[in-house]
Length: 585
Image (cartoon, rainbow, N blue to C red; front, side, top):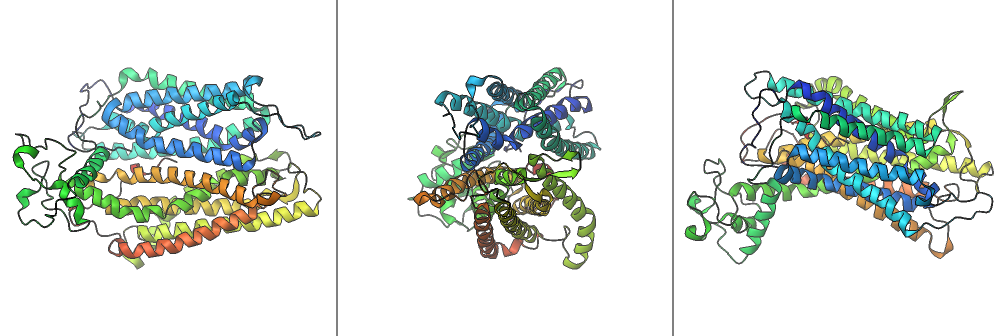
């Protein structure tokens, strides 16, 4: 994810640097970081409930806040890398921060004083968790969030910096090959994280289970630093930053709110920078924002070279139109929250599968946290199936180059997500009823005579929903935004996941509190045989269907873009969506 505009960044010109020889260092750095990070997060709810005596609801809320912080900091990391640090230092500092966080978390498993003792199953006595123990735990989360915020948005583009060579006629093909390999390695790393690392944690315990990801992260940092002499290091830009420019346009419009001259016929009274810009006049949408690009006093507002003397008081027409495009995108962006909320309640699904028969073969049991691999597999298969099989077939009937329009695919993703959660509710109702019939209501750790494979369809459907909605959303925003804002599509996806994690955390805490009032057993009780996770899933499914209706209402404002063939009037050039903008998770 790159958030920048203006002139090209300065690059170290050295024919002996960059190229394919740097790829092993960059891809190994990203792969090991992903295996380590996702390997820790997948099973974390069990660790929090066992050694910090947290309830299922509290642990899920904390993990939601952790996810919100990590994704929110990705936007900050991208801006900081482009504007201040440069991508090399951003990835280096981020990798070290992640390593520090993992070492702290590993120490909580190694040193008994840094965590509470597990609750006694016989006497049902739990030791309290001290403020120091929680401070150490949360500090590890913060360090890892900071690291993820710098590494994930910058690593992929840092690799592209090494291969960028406009003089090479095959440069585009090389870049496309790099992005394919990069995402392939990310997918493989994620699968290894939720299978191998989780299996190690279940088999050998937390000391080894946290130690292995820490060692992998150390190797990640080491490999990245070994390749340092070979890297092309793009310097941080000292010119305009796209996100800062959007804030400047908003501030300039607010400062000039008392200026009522909204309809000017003389284009020279609008500030255009650079001077050769194709955007001559601002659009009539959100006319109050047009004040930001009005030149009130040329002597005061402009420098001798024609640039703005105070960018917080005078913005270019391009910045104003970019801000308008962002505002137009917000209603559709808000429809994506529920699908991410559905994906963020994975902790409860883990507790469900942990109480069921997970044997595929007589002597092999799938770890409960590894069931998310079915979602990843379904996502991967669906993307390949849609791209290679459905697109050629559908394009003949719809006339769309991509088979279905981005808006249609987003809608399919939203309804599929709601159906997945409804299926989860039905499955949980059956599981809970069997647990009660077998006399296991008071024993949440006992195995129910029911195969955990019942949960595979819901994971697969959620994977299809994520793939359909995610790609459609990026393509939709790409069509809506001006060319200079293409990378904002990835930014909005990232911020959307952060907001959704926060919403999910608040929702879990609220449902836990409301359902436990009056001394009743919470729906989200740690004893899932007494609680009613199925009710919570039905609530999420209902909210998902309401969100789909809201999505249909929002679509009425975007009918001109529903065919996927039009861009805004001030953008002349048509091109295919750049899939490097897709969020890595």
